[in-house]
Figure 1 (tube, rainbow, N blue to C red):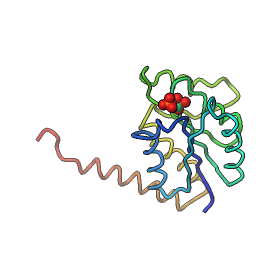
Figure 2 (figure 1 turned 30 degrees about the horizontal axis):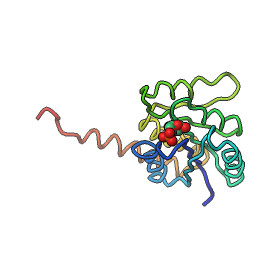
Figure 3 (figure 1 turned 90 degrees about the vertical axis):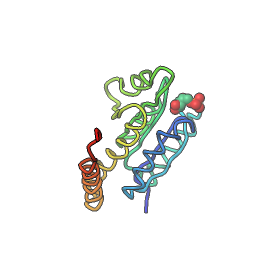
Length: 162
Ligand code: RP5
């Protein structure tokens, strides 16, 4: 199966408790994906090489997670015409620095920015799934089943006050 989603993070420190949930959600939906640690400022040349290679291998959506002065998603978006989903990482400043760095792209190079941290990581995977599902009926079925299971789980919750 060829690659569908390329997941990038600026540091291995973005993985535990956050980006692992993006990968787990892609795995649960059976979406071919791979994860790489690549940084816009620490490994700029390797990042550029990877993006060209990932596109050539079929990547349809790029997910980019970074924290602080988080320009990874914007740099990725500057190098591809495919959708780029940005995830701001939590930081000592609560992730507001990452959020603004990721979401406030000047007009011309869009980054679809998700929530800070784990919620954004999960939702980036689900939004990637929704994009891919436009041309993949089987995936649309898996996404629908995910929603139904999620709703059923909530509706089965017992009264928390008892
Ligand atoms: C960003 O700097 C990474 O995405 C990470 O969120 C942050 C801190 O990285 P480390 O110093 O933990 O490697 O580039």
